[in-house]
Amino acid sequence: TLSLVAADSCAPKPTGPAGGAAPSVQAPPPAPADLSQLEHVRPLSGARQLVLVVTPDYDSITGRLAVFERQGPGAAWKRQAGPFPVTVGRTGLAFGRGLHGAGPSLPGIPAKHEGDGKAPAGAFALTKGFSYNPKALGFRPKMPMHHVTADTICVENPESRQYNVIFDESTAGTPDWTGPDRMLRADGLYKNGLFVAHNTDPVSPGAGSCIFIHSWRGPESPTAGCTAMEPGRVAALLRLLDPAKTPVMVQLPREALDRLAGAWGLPDLDGPGS
Image: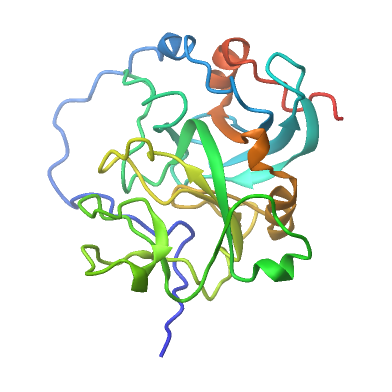
């Protein structure tokens, strides 16, 4: 019989060894964060659609999301939807691996890794969606869609050849993974969603996996590393996004957004609509 898992969204990841003695000397405060190395990349150069998520700081579990579109490189961004509330990782944000590169590795700026409970900060391609029943959406998404069944999983074991991949288990040969994130859930949090291309090109084992946009449990319920919102908002995103417009998700805490907005050409979250 089929057992539908009702775990936390973006299924819980190991948090590292428990126990251990507390340090006897207090650690020094972190050095000031420096994002200058990211001011020289252009993650939005080919994008005509932008999903922008902003949180108050790195530790926040909530934020706001808006969708923007532009006619071409250098054109002004026009807001298409939002802003509306979202939740992120249960321990906030940390820089991941995406269109911006690997992100900074500096004191004061957290770096995403497997099991940290953080959603990835940075810029990430949005290349495919998923749904339990794509026909029930009432429209045909332009994004490539994975039809989720009881066979669909995403692997979080860094040593697996299928690490950070959504696929149907019966098609993958002998398993080299354990305890995958089973996409068909009794709570329906993955009923519709999008795969965030974090840590995909190339895949770095242990840098974080299975990051989605999906439905939330509620406005104060964080995830294990995904970005979540009201179910109707997820469907609306699937209706809006078009792979021909190279959609990109930028997710940043406010201080990083303020530092990178000019270099990356980011709009104001509350900017003008279309």
